[in-house]
Structure formats: structure tokens, C-alpha cells
Length: 248
Image (cartoon, rainbow, N blue to C red):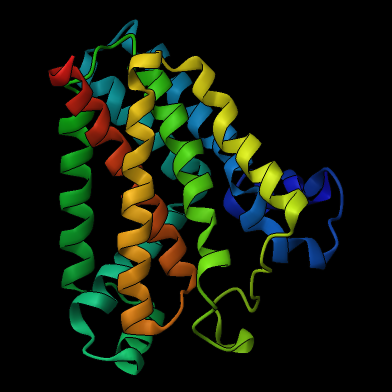
């Protein structure tokens, strides 16, 4: 329970730290329970989008849903995505890429990457049936976090612990944590119409492609890479959902 609470504290800005003091060691395992934080962030998006759609236009409800997660997480993953675009766009080797990613200032690649990302997000989600969007938002969040969490098992950390932004290196999953991560990612899929289940393959493909790119450039991953991988995986989930409409 401490590990799940640590994940809620780490991945959101909500005051879960007031519930109880969590041992510092638990924060080394938060990625293993990342998918459970998706129940909250994805659930908030789904609820806000559904509620807003009852009184506001379709497009406005989607924007409010996406914005709600930004507020809950403090744009934690978006910051990682921007740094990832800056680093891999402006860097030419391992050292320059890591240096750029650690810089707190956002560059042109990061700005353009976020703009394009949310333009794609809006235009993909608005194509989906309104009755399905809340479930796609919830399941895309949890499934993509489960898939992305496996980066800590697939790649080593690219920096020294003291050089990381959080001053912490995530611990690889043990068998129990793998099982918990799977549960956190798969259970919400029960709510998604079965015709959409095949889209789960898209985040897996993005995972292997992106991790291979990280391995070639960095020979590892960083916290920014985790956030970027999640958002790119989630985008592929939304893309697959739209494609499934035209295939049906």
C-alpha cells in the first residue's frame, strides 16, 4: 500500500502526502505502480470529459478533460516530453543530449513538440464517438503507463543517481511488482468495448521503437524519457482507437 501511495504522491500534485508519511525507499519503486496512478489521472480525465459533454460542445469537453490531467499532475509528463524533444532534436551524442535534457529551459523542439502533440490529441479524440471517449481516456492512460513502466526492466538508468532530477534511481521490478503493474494496466480495459482491445498493441510497438532509440543514443533512460515514452504510447493508443473505427 505504501508503494501505491508513493506513486500517487510522486506522479500527482494532490496532497496524498497528508495521509501518511511514506518511507523514502518506496519512491524507488513508484514506476512499478505507475499504472495505478493512471486510475486516478485517467479517471479524472474521463469524468471531466463525460460531465462537460453533457452541457458543453464535444470539442470543449475534450479540451477540459485533457487540461484536468495537466492540473492533477502539474504537467509532469509533458515536461519530460518537451525535454525529450529538445534533447533528441538538438543533441548529437550521448553527452550533449543528456546536457540539453537536464536544462530547465524549454527549446524550440520542445515547444513545437508539445504544440504538435496536443493538436494531434485533439484531432484524434474528437473523431471518436462521444460515448467511447471517457473509456479511451481512462484505458489509454493506465495501459500506456503499464507498458511504459517496463522501461526500467529493459534499460539501465543513463545518469548517476546524484545527477538525476529527483535524486533517485528507480529499482527494477521484482515478480510481485510485475504482477501488480499488469493488474493496474489491464483491469480498466474491461470497461473498453472489446472491438477496441486490439489497439493495445500500438503502445507496445512504440515502446520497443522508442527504447531502441534511447539505447542507441543514451545507452539507457532518464526520468524525462519515462514521461515522453508514456505520452507517445498514449498517443498511439488514441491513434489506434481512431483507426479501429475505419476498420470496423
